[in-house]
Length: 327
Image (cartoon, rainbow, N blue to C red; front, side, top):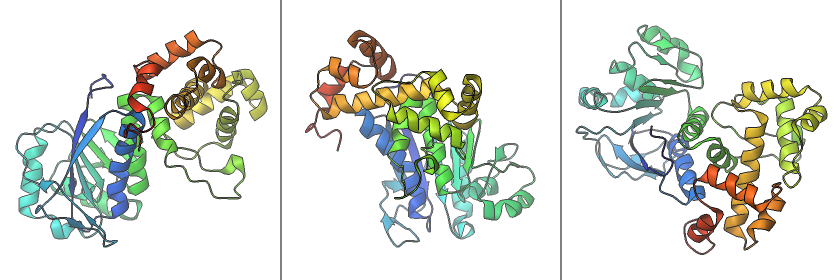
């Protein structure tokens, strides 16, 4: 994918009948949120079905589609979504279309049982792939030409596979991170956080950024401290002491758990908080800088522009309340 963060990424999404509604949402919602929090058309997608009719999901809520799946020579990524009874819909016609379009696509992704459809079409031969944990042994024995691995999702060159709905959400966050950086992935992930009432703070679920499996409790504690000290950021040494590890060990824990060092996560938290204040308030930028831990307005301005590729004034102009772009 290109590095220009303003360029729109287009995707084609083929939804097979009897797909779970949450699986469809796991692909689309992170893209929608990325568009909303950026105020830009970062992603566009077309939803297709094998016959052009709305998909009746297992929850009996239909998914409208834009068109029938009749690909030509499109190069945009193709996501193939399937959940239940995939064999019923793996017709020779559909497999032929998948095989033909895969020659041109930059990426073909099998989402949950979509992995089976790709394997059945020989599109995973020689690639590493994963499947839902319930089907792992059967999938591995059925397709020995595929390097089956026990992972939540697998990105192997031009092929992507996932093992379920929540792994798909992790995948989409990772793709957003690769395309638009850690700050964007973090801000999108925070829209999906649910914390059960009464859960101890350190044990609460932490946002996933694509590489998170289970957050180390020490990393969770450090993240919580960062969130509590946005206005007056803690140094790495103080964070490490509060968590009970050395500076170097804390850095290693962060890299192992979220794939980013503490200072990257901390700066992303502060800049995302600043961005929300730019959008949602009329505070002066100097005041926002002070509230988010920057020692000067100029330092804030430089950091803001480096992360968001626009000035705070530009953001406020585009995404001011009432503009209709942040709803």
